[in-house]
Amino acid sequence: MNASQKAHGATIGVIERYREHLPVTAATPIVSLSEGSTPLIYSSRLSALVGRGCRVYLKHEGSNPTGSFKDRGMTVAVSKAAESGARLVVCASTGNTSAAAAAYAARAGIQCAVLLPAGKIATGKLAQAFVYGAVVIALDGNFDQCLKLVRELSTEPGISVVNSINPYRLEGQKTAAFEIIDALGDAPHLHLLPVGNAGNTTAYWRGYVEYHKLNRATRRPRMLGFEAAGAAPIYYGRVIEHPETAASAIRIGNPASWNLANAAFQESGGAIDIVTDEEIFAAQRWLASNEGLFVEPASAAAVAGLFRCRTPAACAICPVPKIPDDAVVVCTLTGHGLKDTAAVLNDDRAKPIAAPADKAAILSILEKAK
Ligand code: F0G
Image 1 (cartoon, rainbow, N blue to C red):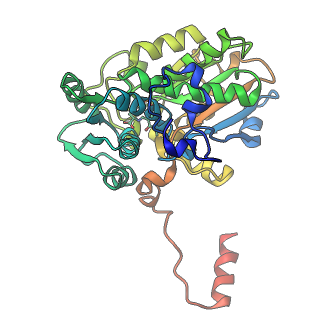
Image 2 (cartoon, rainbow, N blue to C red):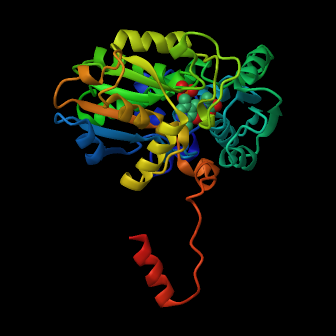
Image 3 (cartoon, rainbow, N blue to C red):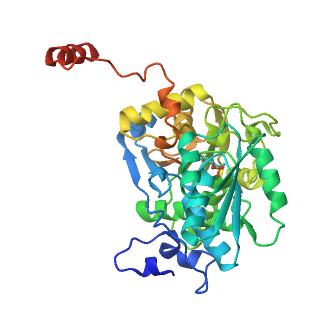
């Protein structure tokens, strides 16, 4: 435990909250930003849309210190890197992992380098990597090529790779499942997630399985994952050489945790499905304008999936019709909308209405907007 964590009244992070379930010892210097303990928000509107007495909750991971779920895994990975005496942490990223790695490395006093696909990172995430002091390297290639290079760097002495191929990342991320069970008193019946590198699906499933084994839950949820239609290697069962989606966080064609996530879908009685960019953006707008929750595009994929699955045309593999009446459903909202404002502002509808400083003009505009 470091000095700031010992400070009286400081909010605890996921390592302190779930220490006995995590691979840390008294010798591990805890690098934390008081991550985790994120809101689990009940959505009466989504509950009504699913119907049959089901209750839908949203796990708002954008509330983490760097604005995404990555902080849960990064506190463990960087703490372990510090313990091992690493001099550099490095990662490939579509943006959020790099933001989290850079922040936790800064806190640990370790240098950080991030490998990003050039021109494909949302500006908020890029700003984070810079301001936290990382060496930002833009590669003329996609995320999968960045990750391949990082794997090659991992054999160098003193370098710790903090992508989810580092087992400590998934260990930290499983705490989100613990929090949900602790909040609800049991596991949900169904859990929906966006899928990119497939680490988060794997981590949630691990958390649910572990808590179930410890009798902290009476059941394990069906896991339902959603890839973007143009970047859906698991759904199609083949590597996608040139993945394409406007949801840049999940623009991945060869996920690192492919097999583990597939096992999660199968063991849980769940499924992997796809959502189009159009469905993703519709869900993003829906969440913001109906629930007051601004998430980045990739983060809306689970809710886009829920919308798709409740339609009569839902595919045969979809477990939504298989869940019981009065079921509990959780969707994870993985990252904050402010990371990618261009995704909203590029829309023609996102234009302010010009007006003179005149009360009557304002009232007239408000009348038309009704
Ligand atoms: N949502 C957001 C906002 C993400 O940033 C990511 C992944 C995912 C969902 C998918 O999670 O990879 O565990 O299946 N972002 C990684 C990154 C790839 O580099 O920030 P996953």
